[in-house]
Length: 378
Image 1: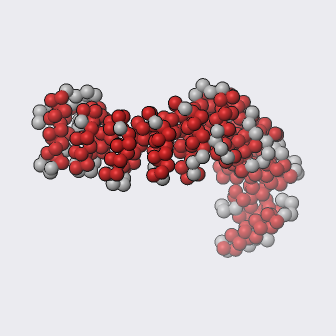
Image 2: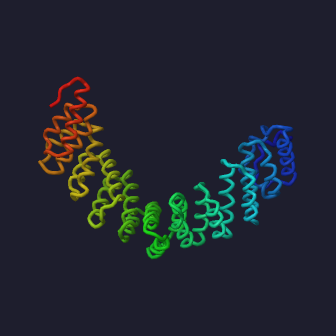
Image 3: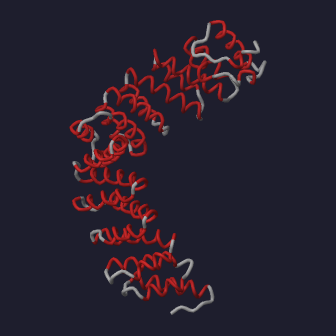
């Protein structure tokens, strides 16, 4: 082979080069030579070109080559090329592949091409096969949503829970671009049951936030029930990492007019922890000012984070606080946070807390730790 061949890189190979490479691949498939001399070639460009010239021949060769990167790329690209003109045939050809990375990549490629021309047929094929390959579901949903967003989201929203997230996430991501409130409302209504609508609301909120955080929050406030809670959770969790103070403010506003839910509670934990990692005193002030049904959880999470990072400053803050219910929650959380490293100090703080079942259980735990260390509690 020409010494220059290993550096060959072209998206459209001349026929002689195509023939030369195919002859070398044929010899490698027959065990007459190694693929080492071809390893440095730009197969990301060459494989599609070879497959476009002779997809059937390239597929046959790929399946006879030693398992590896070259064989996989040739197999995937040849099946992709076949699917452009005859997706049903390409789908049948997949049966020749054994389970593994090659089969998964080729399936995704075939479904993506099939969805370009007949998304419903591609969706039916992947559903009948029952794949656990998330990329396959995403391939169909994404291509379909670019053409028919309502139909794609409706299909994805009605899939079984174990595959719905992958398909719905991709369908919504493609469908949300430049959508009005009315269009987004229709997307949600197309999702079927309440659970699917809530899941889609979270995905829409995330997509909107990537473009305009303020608009994403505004849209979330137009929703009701579980969909609103899911959208709020997603937005607040996202902003909790980059701007915990702003996330805390948004969550406070949501709590005023949104019912408690698992989604809201989850967002509350994320905000409390993130806020305490950047400004623990401000996080505690925020948590102590929340409504009673959310206050205890937020206070606990913020104080636990503070006690783990800087117990001295946390204790100094505590001694300055008035004797409120929120302060009592904070003292219990502080004691829990230092229990493993300083059970004697934890006991002292617990003694300053109002009597409660939680306090009594923590006192018992602290005394047990001290006893194991050969110390005396009370």
